[in-house]
Image 1 (cartoon, rainbow, N blue to C red):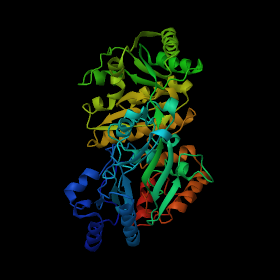
Image 2: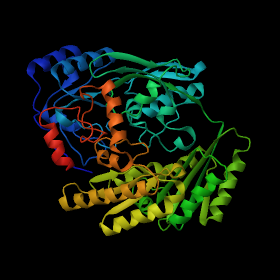
Image 3: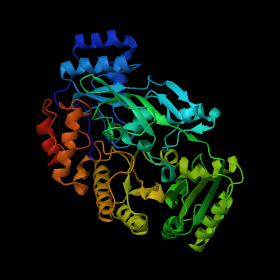
Image 4: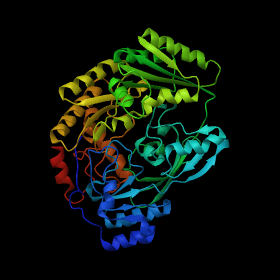
Length: 492
């Protein structure tokens, strides 16, 4: 983690003529240049990184996005697409004097096709809103990030977001079938669409997860799923984290595929129970698992009972089972409100996002707790245990320089250990700025250079979300004012 501040080298206010032309395209309320208003856009959900954009523009559709991007490209000004700002990797920061293209006004569901189980939406549609709109037809949108009540489909596409139910249903890329995209020169492309199999190269799959470095998705076609006939939800309480971890592996090894298999540890439970979100979980337990099965009613209860038996054999002191929707919501409370509860404990929260094999969870979690003790930090864990997607949450105050240094060092150690355990540096939050320096842990220069070559096909001048994802030492396509020198100093 590297704290950032300011507008970046060589950046300043936009030329008055350019601002006037942007306002002609978008209307007087579609361009923000007031310094006080720009502060709202200086960070995403990872508050340690803060960079004020030169301006913010708010288009309403594909044509306006294309017109704005063409205008910026002619002036050689980089841009950063931004959704709801809930990202956790610094991906929406306006580095190198960028203009933020905010997509929040593009919030319409353009079509909903129940017969073919598809929908087409603008990128600013809130994730949970799509499922609400599809519910009367017995359908829903499966990817469910923990921030789904606020995050938008466009941001989910950029980061290839997952969520608690991705264990069974997969991440965003498994549900996107078509895209309308605006390239960094303003050209509009149609990728995929129609819900059929991909013909030729899978450019939709390539674009999803590109973190805004290939361009802007302005329309998104997604696959909808039928609402499950029945749901069984369990909350298993364990005295030890290791026992809960072994239960996770045992459930999967038994051939079961829960829709969700989540873990929260003691630190997280205490934070929730001390907050307005209290869920009635004993604060002396070491960890809790939320286990959910869904599908046809026949046999589902028996499947849940098998999971109960496994949890008890692995040392669960108690297993609660929801009898109805209200109880199900209660069992999920500790998991879904965890991040909100932590917000009262410290000014800042670094949510890391590494993945390890399920069988390595006990040793990696033990290492994380050791790191917390050595660096005198409060670290809690709440994560997608079923697929080994860890979220160590480090509480800190960015105003304390010494604490920030300790957070950075602890974060590096955790990431390196996860990779050494056979894992990787991100499962769903993306690389952005925060994890860019860790790319070298999992890729050599040849692989990184190949990624740069792919990016240049879409983004040859580096105007789309510059200085993100790939290390500048191997990917130097952006040559804005002072960029190379500043990056070489920062990267050592």
